[in-house]
Length: 327
Length: 179
Image 1 (cartoon, rainbow over the protein chains, first blue to last red):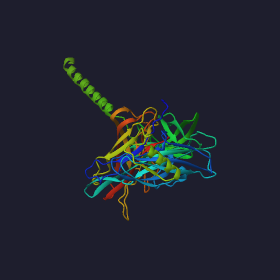
Image 2: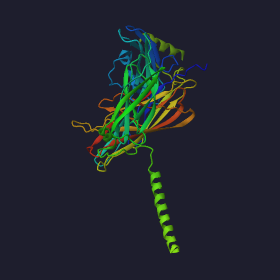
Image 3: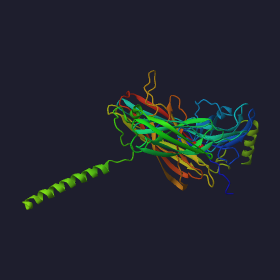
Image 4: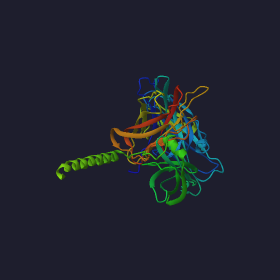
């Protein structure tokens, strides 16, 4: 009983709070595996064959609306974790293999539809796990809100998608492996970032953890651990690690990066150069010295300075007070 | 209900989508994860006032009615570059927008608070075509059940030398049930 998974439906509604918001928006749509409580599709097959399944699309809103369905590839987002492309994203893997029987539906409130689909697996593709998804994109997706003052205004249009993953397992060895491909530095608006290149050359989805230690020999040393969410096979990211405290000044450093996943661990020692350009990216062209960037307050120094000043005056006043008696 | 199920089975067999005229969700849909977004303040800017970081929020409502074991859920975002459009568009940087914080609160119980593993700030990807998304909040397995208000705060960097005009960007949120 406790093993019964309750299916998770995924839907997204875009709503506006501003009075200036656009017209009424469509209903949210949920996706689930037809006749199953599993949270997402896990299909097993062979290269050169076709799999069949179906997805249930549900209007969980209170008004009628249309929804567009499409397949998409899964990849690894820059901060790790599986993410999925939009309608404009080129598809080369599972997203290209998914053939939905319908691409558009109109559903009333509470109404649902079962949409069969096929996964046409090309011959010759690598073994192991492949990741894609099915996306439900409401027809009335764009909610625009904005404001104007003077000659400039900004508008944000919100689109809301629901995604259910489609994992395709093919015969072959499952290798969970993350490798370190490099390290570099960059910066943006007051934040210094170290970009750790990480790739999954394996054949299986994996999660992991890591740490980067940067030192300049006898000087400063920082260590930042990080956690890696789902990493899709055959993908690569530049994972951003923020330098906390004072920024590392321009110069040459030694970076020790460790990444662990699937029972394996890799450590690489690499040179890291912090360039003046990357510092200027973070702190502007007038950058001259490493500024405090997060969490470090100068208040203790101010208080300390005031204490010293007060103590100095106090000592001086006592000395002056003693002088007449000494005479 | 039987008739609805038969129709669904027939639709599956024939490869044609089957509409269920249900007033409630299918019986297998014992759980739902819903996300509602709203954005309160839209930013406007006086570009003579130096570099600006404009903030706005998107108030999201995430509702996961699953019980027992749950795989959790992920919120992702991507966007298009802020642009004035037209024949000679002016744009902001593709790294102009960041999510600097995400707050959540139980909107209606019972709630199992989400255990989020995404470190912030997160740069919202941007391009002329929305690039690969990034996760900005997630609920680990067996967490995030209930109804939650999730409120990411966005900061948009507007350099002083930006051209005056109307800048527009499309934010694409997605809520994902997957690994």
